[in-house]
Amino acid sequence: MANDHPIISIVVPCYNEQENVRAMIDRLRGVLEPITRDYEIIFINDGSADATSDRVSAAHGEDGRVKLIELSRNFGHQLALMAGLDVASGDAVITIDADLQHPPELIPEMLARWQDGDDVVHAVRQRSGGGGIQRLTSRMSYRLLRSLCEVDILPNAADFRLLDRRVVQVMRQLRERFRFDRGLVRWLGFRQGQVAYQEDLRLGGRPAYRWSQRVRLLGNAVFSLSSRPLSLVGVLGLFVSLGAAAYLVFVLATRLLAPDRFGVQSGWASTMAMILLFGGVQLVAIWLLGQYVGRTYEETKQRPPYVIARGLGLEGPGIPRTTRPRLEIPGNLLPPSRQV
Image 1 (cartoon, rainbow, N blue to C red):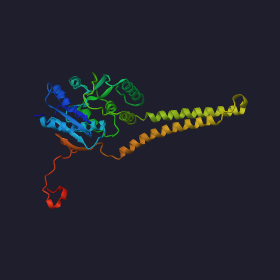
Image 2: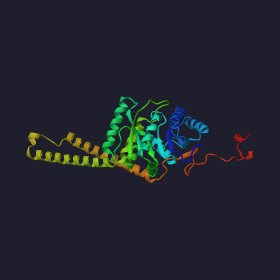
Image 3: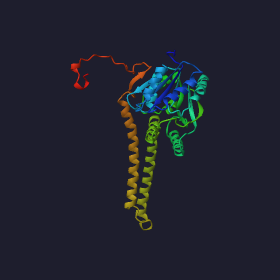
Image 4: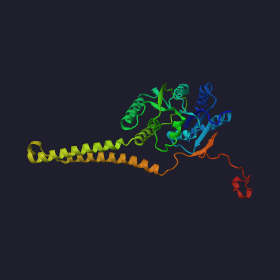
């Protein structure tokens, strides 16, 4: 029988992963059983439209250590991870994707680093499984994050990591909706280590992350971890203003001192160029301000970051009851279509 407080919790966010659920469970069991039988595998069904929930429910019937949190709709990968951390009860909590691009066979090495004293163990990709364009954009994204964010982002780290119980408890206090866990974990501090892995090809189904979602995640990373973009826009505005002032002095000087030599400097083309330049800088500044103000507005609503529709094998204040009492409704109270 599984322990009520398992030593290891595996958190697996899922979105349309029906083809991978069984293989993920089998590989996790093969890795964990030789180490300990006190573990739990928590699948977070993030509004899947396929049979992901049914596959996990069937696995729960075979083994109560396989558990399910079903969100009421698709809230996104980062919030699904938050839901998993909120219910995980292990001394070590490991987050891993359901597509098996993160090899479960790396878990023993992560646990060994945890036993050696690391509070956080990051799995760092040595080679991306995507194409050349994806690898290039990934490198560029990490360079952008490292230059703009006030947190030391670990290059090529994924959401495949081990967290000590102390770290999980602190992560539960970070309730922001626009989150980037790879940066938040680094911001927390603690003793952090890393292990290397080769990313495998996706086992089945289609990738859940589209390019638009990657761009949105990159924006969340920048705007949630740093206010440096506002400072950079301020510096840009200062340089543009100084350049405009210098150009104005030049135009006035040439008009007064040597109009024939330098010609007319205040014509339509130069005027339009200055207007467009200033307008572009102002629009970029307004857009940046809007990103921060919009996120602040969403956070001040204080809505729950996610909604749990039901839980299987888990109990807690945020997990509703899934059983409905059976009522005998008199037939004369039913519409004709429901009467037997």
